[in-house]
Image 1 (cartoon, helix red, strand yellow):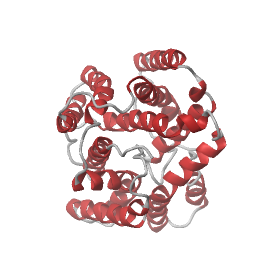
Image 2 (tube, rainbow, N blue to C red):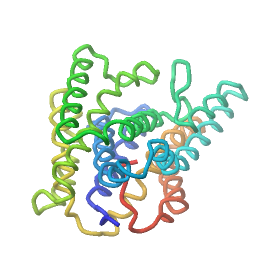
Image 3 (cartoon, helix red, strand yellow):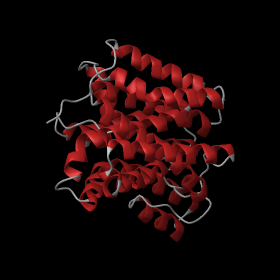
Length: 314
């Protein structure tokens, strides 16, 4: 069994908190924080490519089919997403009454699939990234795992060029509809491939000897990314280096909890915040409720996973 990379736990914990904090202020109508949530999501995809290459590529080349790989990913991702989406469904039904569209959206999101309409994931907005994650996993299992390092590098460059072309046309800005999400796939696929290539090229050997500085550097990148698009791209380019620099972080209690809480927090916080706002709860109470739900899912689900199971980005 591969050793657990505690630096990745710390990074994904920071990223999940940044996304949740952004949604807290936006849902409650406060001024936005100086954090770039898109960089946090990009980091998730770089981490995912890195960890999927580390954990599954040998098996994908031998005894693990693409279908089996996707099944493993569904099992890993399903329960926290289902809990968050159930909260979203209950909130929508309570506010708007029983109607077929909500239950149709619920059935689709449990399959990691978008709805047809102005909002692709109306019950649980962060599910868009899990849909894109499954797309990246399917491409990984069926195609990218079979490429040589040089071929993978070419594929990554091609994906980056497509992302840049989409960016210059203003097509990579976040939007709730499926069209906007599809245009974001080149960006997140580029991140995923960058993570794959980083692991293939360097393995899990740490870069430098001060891993805690990598966590601080990521916080700085989150702040810089909120200033303008150029700094956001600089932060994105820095993320693979930050990941490598974090790899030597030792086992610490806060790091373990940060990693364990990160996906439950990410998968449940928006529906909880929307329900809190609909009930007229104070923002501090809404944030506390988010923490309680994430902690419950973590204790019930994440902490029961094998202690030495490799860290995953989602």
